[in-house]
Amino acid sequence: DTGVSQDPRHKITKRGQNVTFRCDPISEHNRLYWYRQTLGQGPEFLTYFQNEAQLEKSRLLSDRFSAERPKGSFSTLEIQRTEQGDSAMYLCASSGGTPAEAFFGQGTRLTVV
Amino acid sequence: AQSVTQLDSQVPVFEEAPVELRCNYSSSVSVYLFWYVQYPNQGLQLLLKYLSGSTLVESINGFEAEFNKSQTSFHLRKPSVHISDTAEYFCAVIASGGSYIPTFGRGTSLIVHP
Image (tube, rainbow over all chains, first blue to last red; front, side, top):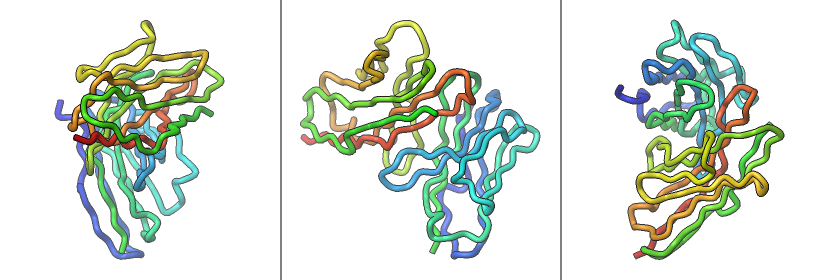
């Protein structure tokens, strides 16, 4: 068990470009979450998967955002046509049951210039 | 829907002094409660959790929190802080019977001065 890993750790992109982040959860965990965190704020829920099914999406997840979890393993979060307001830390977490604590990755820090 | 309030955005304290970080929650159903710690440019690490049983829970590094249902609180305490405790602390709640998605507070920055 190597914990939750996220790639890349940092991403700088120009406004209007598309970006994709990857998350590898703890292998036996069936639940996977994406959160966004801005400076001085707590993590804000974006979406979650149970196995390969995306079961809930936040209103924060505009139509420029899409997430997938093929085969219930790793997950990707894509942001199309990035805007400066998308600059944030994107956190992935996984958990193995309900109720259970979520284990977080180190995050991907996105800077849109 | 559940929510979490962390009233103190910053708590400055001197080394070896006691500290309390406050957390209040709102939920119409029973809850599960968590405290996480975040160091700069890192993800969140679980500090302690209340799922059931004893309302007083402890971490391995000297923190404790008590679930108080009547006050809807889960305050975090440590009797003597160290410089290394300087970090952001987040309280989180999961409401039972729903999606079991953790909801986080805005966080409290604990600043320990020598």
